[in-house]
Amino acid sequence: MPTPPYLAVALDGTGWHPAAWREPDARPRELLHPGYWVDLIRRAEAGGLDYVTIEDSLGLQTSRYDGPDGRTDQVRGRLDAAQVAAVATPATTRIGLVPTVTVTHTQPARVARAVATLDHLSGGRAGWRPQASNRADEAGHFGRRTLPRFDLADIGRPDIAPVFAALFDEAGDVVEHVRRHWDAGPPPQGHPPVMVLAHATVPYRLAARAADVVWVTAFDAARVAAIVAEVREYQAAAGRADETLHVFGDLVVFLDEDAAAAKARKDRLDEWAGAVFATDTLVFAGSPAELADLMAEWQASGVTGFRLRPGALPHDLDAITALLTAELARRGALRQPAGGTLRERLGLR
Image (cartoon, rainbow, N blue to C red; front, side):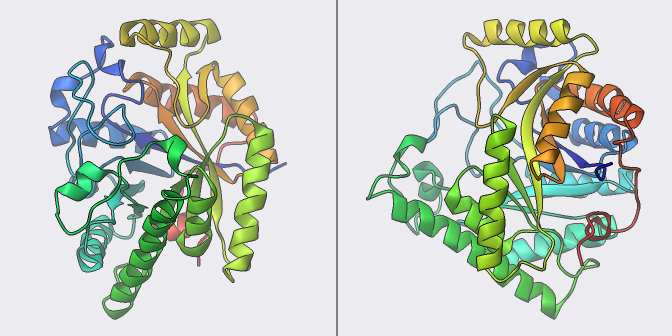
């Protein structure tokens, strides 16, 4: 029987669907209150999950790739992810806390201090996601560089590809500098785990060079297998073939006991949003058994865990921690909650 997968959830606003704030149990007025985030993280911990991630950026959320969209019918505005994680430390005891940190415009010493502080406050449960910023509007906040405006479809253009690659190379350099800071004044874990979200070859190379965990996006198991093979190839090329690099499947989840109810709920949200929700990865809507089957397929393709993005909060978080975990336990595929540091829990030396 395969080793049970690691499980994490990605927290963002009222959920990953842009209309999730309209749900009856949503709490959009509480998004800038620490109690909202502490409550969600405690629910994830009670459900036995390994860690939570907290989204962040240097600019407002947007439906555009290249800058603000000016919309007022979707959630806009966030608290600082690292500080949210810090606020949750006294209210939790076991779960890993992984904030997003934009490194493109942030000095490595500041990053090192923030993540080390979180590691000390949590007793060794911190991780972090270094995020490259390619948005021209975010660069404009700082005035030290300019970036061209471009869309996702443009990253292969001869004039854009070098810019895109340079941003991720810089992110890798920041990770290295942060680790050198920690070597001089180590936090409890020494090096809190680095986690990278990767959609394509350039971020795969960053993960292979600098990460402990990479979250990969895909739409089927065949693509997952191809991505895993590519990541392992770059890992070996980076001289890290003997190190643990976890590959997690990353997908959006709408989950109900009845598959038809989950699909109907997503359809209702799509109607409220005025468009069918699609994103950078698979959007799943169905039952716990169907999700467990999908996870088994992806695990057979080489992933060692999953980061699940709840479509709507708190509904889908609660469904993951109750319905999905119960289904995995029935199959003997549920990893038992573990203590210790986040590095220890993930089997990282």
